[in-house]
Amino acid sequence: MKYISTRGQAPALGFEDTMLTGLARDGGLYVPESVPQMSTEEIAALAGLSYEETAFRVMRPFVGDTFAEDEFRAIIARAYAGFGHAARAPLVQLAPNHFLLELFHGPTLAFKDFAMQLIGQLFQAALARRGERVTIVGATSGDTGSAAIEAFRGLDNVDVFILFPHGRVSEVQRRQMTTPSEANVHALAVEGDFDDCQAALKAMFADDAFRDHVRLAAVNSINWARVLAQVVYYFSSAVSLGAPQRRVSFTVPTGNFGDIFAGYIAQRMGLPVDQLVVATNQNDILHRCLGGQGYHKGPTVPSISPSMDIQVSSNFERALFDAYGRDGGAVAQLMDELKSGGFDVSQGALQFLGEVFASGRASEEETLATIAATLKDSAKLICPHSAVGVKVANAQRDPAVPMITLATAHPAKFPDAVERATGVHPPLPPRMADLYERSERVTRIANDLTAIQDHIRGHIAA
Ligand SMILES: *Cc1c(COP(=O)(O)O)cnc(C)c1O
Image (cartoon, rainbow, N blue to C red; front, side):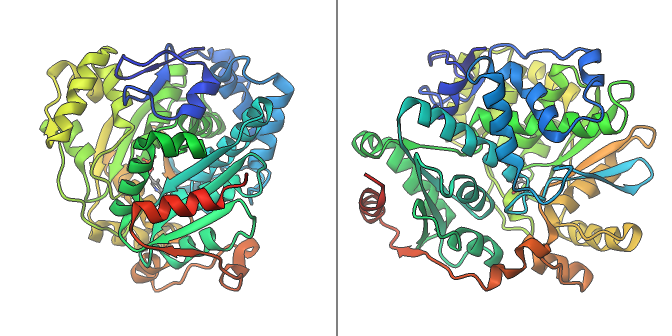
């Protein structure tokens, strides 16, 4: 299995190099050269399997012979062993023919654990074999950083440094980053905002001497291995509801388009998906684009679903690549136009996207009202991101087709919004109840590239 860049100018790579590289050298994103198919019989045979075995069968064709079968099975087993639910991604019912896929039973209570836990184990296995070490540096507004720290803590071949904006992440998010005690974990509270953290990260990747010296690696959401890990729960949930004999639909609360793109890959592999609905909050560039208004940046407006507050949705480039007939030159040109504000989507590409994706948006008021209504009508507390999904799903769904809405975070991760909507303070799961008592370890650092680079150089294991 080879992976090619969406901008057509980088060398094709195998799975392992695609994963370790992250971003392609031409600035593009890696996608599989062709999407492997699962037959109706193979999908039907997933019924009743463990999440881990489903993951093995769904991901195996993409991974090829990078790992021996037994080793890949062991990697998957280690990745999901720390989840707090035997089903890993359980389905619960909200209403007749409307289901919630709970993706928040991992160690940091958000769906990013599904991909990050797997990528931690994949990196460890690949690096140990190569006898190499890397330094992972990430910038986060909250969820990605905590998921990365949980995934890489205590691993032998990796140091992980996470930059987060001092004073601007929730207390649960901060504590998840500052309480792990392993020596290879480094939480850096930058005196700046999230954009400052991202700018510092970008500058470090552009500094070749630094990059080579610390052997910098990235695990942000454009990494193909992260998308791949998320394909699995589309299969596991659909099969639970009767696929492939019965079609199902999905609604996905979307920011960087990674999670919904995984649903698109599942469909391309042969999973019978009826609707694939993109749900955005008030930062609705994707909803506007899919509605034919072009892809034009606006200001990012902070919302109560902060993990979806994006201006540019990086994984959308992968969908555009297919919509433009896999013409890397055309995608490169669009991305060039994006630097100066945005671009219009061609009629042909818009038609392609419209056949695959539906979309909707939820305002702040609608999100709060949906959290309240879901508690009243279905006795479930949901987080604001999941509520955006539920609101959009209710507006779009065909009552005759089962709708699966992805619940992307645990309500206790965003307690203020949930309490504002319902008057109920959502408790942390018992296995995490002592989070507020654990001691914290964090380095406060100036918003200064040299200071950050010096700190990293001085704290990597030799
Ligand atoms: C990251 C995140 C999202 C958005 O996911 P994308 O893959 O970026 O679309 C939604 N909800 C939560 C809780 C998240 O952490």
